[in-house]
Image (tube, rainbow, N blue to C red; front, side, top):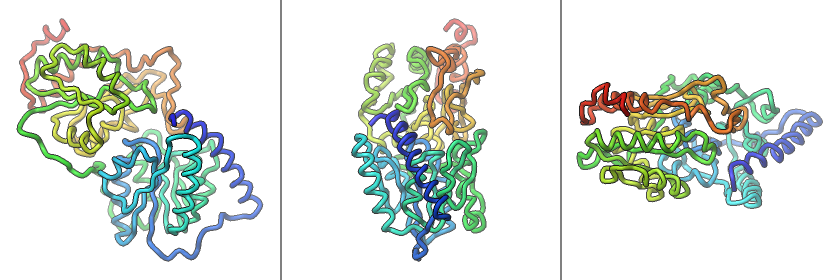
Length: 395
């Protein structure tokens, strides 16, 4: 099922369900909760985005430290189970099938019913403004629930505590602020707002220096891609001027796009195309064994942050303030046009480009990208030729 269709289902079907919930509350009063719960089952909800799921890890660690005896459950879409298996912070992962509209709606209610029977003491809804996650919170009827609120909808009526999403704050910190609204979390563990974390699957491999390049962006917004010709020029420059292996990555459904870029690269002896050939676990291992990741705003960026691998990242429709790399060493390119960013949590992360094509990703200067990349990579002690400023100007 496409992301656009899921957004439509959430916006219209979800809004309608919330309308009836609101009416029920107005007639019968306070939302009924299950007062018989006497366990420490805690549920986290995050449907959208591998990167966003990774960014929840620091917040989840705080909750686990505050409730060390709790059993942790995580509800997500079935496309995210691989990354959650690698994060390893949930005792049980529950996924909703999104293979089609009927499967989604059916599985949504089946899984919600199963979750209700488990009896949760606390639910933290990490979705920003999604209706269906709020509907789940209402149907489960836990003792306490925490979620984000905004002025455009009435989802706050199902939670016992809500906070606004701060647009000028990194998403990782927004998740931490959400769990901090639980006084137990805030009082029992001091704030440790460090990097998100992933299990270290593999160390550095056989002494060979390696740079991984992710030319893709997920289906959520292809407009986040740096134009292909930029990656061709940049990859050619790196392969010709640095003594390292370049690895190109991507999922199976991105193979055609990556193959097209790979086909235009001059020095293929130094570049390996692994697009469509790696699992999530293998991708994590690939990034973990790299000296640097070069990427668009997408999931691999946050994998690198979780592993504290240096990152070179390109942003346009989305803001690096909200989703920028958290690695200790990073280089971010962002034009910050008057229309940027046009994606936000309040518009369901939808690109609202006012142009025929995203100028925010097309107006970078390739010579400036190469110049700054050259300096950054040499700062990582990746061996390369000494390139004069005159040579760079001639590119």
